[in-house]
Image (cartoon, rainbow, N blue to C red; front, side, top):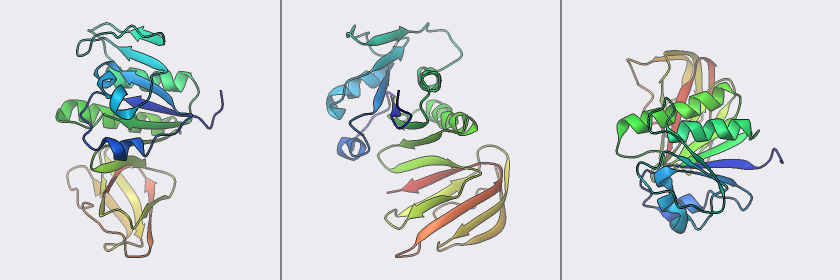
Length: 209
């Protein structure tokens, strides 16, 4: 397997702007569909390489592709199990779609997948109808001025030595903790690319379309 191939995990949250999501997909992506994520097959115009789920929210389509049937009572969500499968299959890059939805519990659990993949030194992002989400940790991350806003949220504890350059609200040696989220709705300066570094800890970077 080429390490350049990417693992795309498709969850069951609603996708309204299908064309935007399709623009992120590549011809050689490896698609893991999770249970009710199967409802997106037609809209995305892609076929699964692997199906996982307990099929409590979508019937098993019994397609001629590898399918892992999970018990309904389990510790891992279907999406988390899918991410673990991607790790077992040696993918270095992950894209999560259909994972940000109306249920805040599922949404937060799926965001934690980004933390887990970052811990494993994997490149990962989630995309929904409104934004891109990724983890900012020990490597500099960039935000182009095509995004309307970007936010830095602490979801793990305390992040220190935070630097933001090229933005309306710059920051030098900053600190953000979970009970004071002041890094919301920043803007990239016109014609520039914002640079974000985090010396200690992790932040959730949300780039809003």
